[in-house]
Length: 346
Length: 223
Image (cartoon, rainbow over all chains, first blue to last red; front, side, top):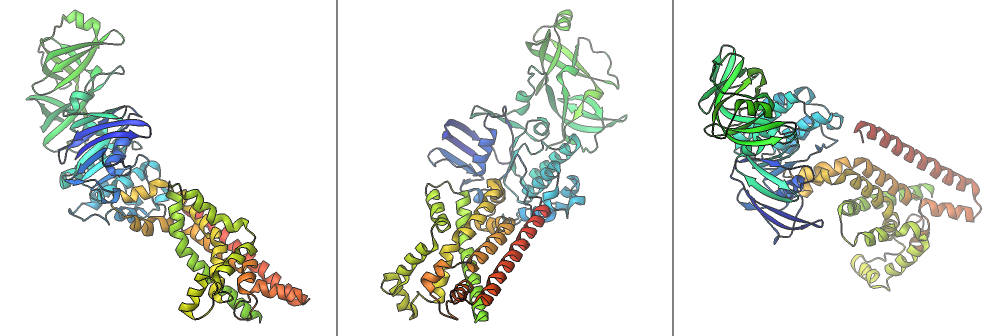
């Protein structure tokens, strides 16, 4: 998908430039009101600028009207057709674009917890149910690009993770790309690889999502590490992060392969010596590469592994007591229980 | 005589309503979603029969339909019969007269659907026509029924336009309301009572059924 959008839109100046590889999964970042929905609507062909101001090319063809576009947008407020039952509305999604792939409808309906609702009228569903139905309907329309606008907002944690797994499965089977705007960054940590940041109706692209997401802001921050799920060891799952093993509670579903794990930056402490690793504490050998004072007598310490970096927030007092300096090799420690499984997007 | 008038009235109202629905559905769908500058003009034209005395409308229609006008002459050329004082002349007059009663409920219904309904279908790949048949029209069903009933009953009740362009030819243009006027004029109150009372009761019954059905369907689809 390539787009170059520069022009006036409702008395504001737009400036969106970008080029995403086929099948790329892009997190759309930005505060509310920055223009994420505006961009998604333009990419879906629902809003249009004159040809001279907006050149949008999706899956190799210039974007025409919304119904000709190979991209599907799922609205922030799920749209239900009140005269449909769940089954009807999901099959309605499958009616228009050529069915290039066979999709496991039953399996996904089960994963999204929709089988009991299958014959219910859409008008009687709750917000979270509508969101899951609309998601399945959108997937069944087989878009080459999936544009999701806060599509997991009404779901609880477990259902959100399951819905993300279904989306990941869809992208794997069809090679579809994904642009995902989400207030809660957990779906992006599960699904996305790169970032497109929107600020006051202009956008910029960052190829590495976690370099961007793992920064600490004033409220603290999550950190996500990419690794490989390897094996079970003494009741834990071992994940290899840049050749170093890390342990966490065995997730509900996993298979060997790429894995994402997240933890809160404030759960990480820094130790100088390599004491033994216990079954309770993870220890990663890292290099200190940055330091940023934050609120409340604390510092955000940038830590570098071979391929990726993450952040620990520690007290200024600890920093001084340990006499830490940039470039020093130390050990990042965190409890096994602090680690969250964030899926296996690829 | 009464049966002739009843039959003619129902035939006129049915034909008028059917033709109006065909014309008004796309018109109302367009009015509900357009941002065109022509919209207030079109809306005013559509609403005009609400405020005009029916005789004004009937007068102009009569002029247009007369064989002396170009349109009237063309009609005679085509069908070998004058449009004025004929059944099809009445149909055209009734359509003009009942237009707002069909367009307005339809327009409100389409407006009530909001833009997102159509957008959501488009973004699944559904063409506007497919969206209209599969989504917008079924969702507009309560409005469609209301529009048909209002158009039908309003045509049954029309008087001025029919009198102007149809006259009072039994079996051809003598509808119930004209027959009623005729009976009152000749002081035949017994028959006039039957006709007037019948119209009141049947209209009330139809409207009651409509509102009751609307109420239930609103509950059913949570609208």
